[in-house]
Length: 280
Image (cartoon, rainbow, N blue to C red):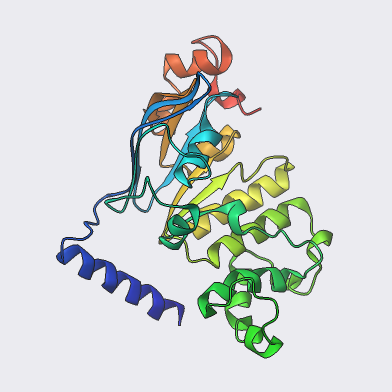
């Protein structure tokens, strides 16, 4: 069923492309001169970002660099002061958050496991209700919701939570709660996943588990992530964009960025410092 839905979406997009309504190229997301000002303070200043389709793209920078503000602009939780946001060749700058989400741009917390006293399975089913046109309508019958069980279990299998399907979410470890957030994100069938600090606050074991999970679920989709842990960034990122004071300081692979003197100075105050040690 999932494969058929994916094939149908692809056919629809190809049809749109031939009609000239949408041109699907190598770039899935682009910002042009993206700017956000707050009462005279410029948090994001003329950012030109280009995210390659099918890649894992990391957005990094020192505290206060503008990373989270960028995420809030991309999902329209903040309105840009200036600039454009283009997704799949379409200018989405003026669209509302719900419209952008329907296009397949999903930020992890938008549909995360926010119901601590529901089971793991029930949390994923809430996300899946969108496919039945019954999103968040809790008065629907249990029989209707049970139709989603197979798909929910498939998602839980993908994130390694099958054995926890009947566990109340509040009882999960922090790392497994983040895995559940990824499952609920996947339930919305994202084309572009935005992950904000997916390993923040985790111990080493959970970091390794969630990093491997992100790599696994990246197959067939694009991921844009904000992350402080440079070991995570080095291990799974295809492209890294470094922000400083709201502007793009550098961009490239980890090998390229980690040798950039300006990046070293921004993180550590010295061009001789190691970026690998800058994952506070």
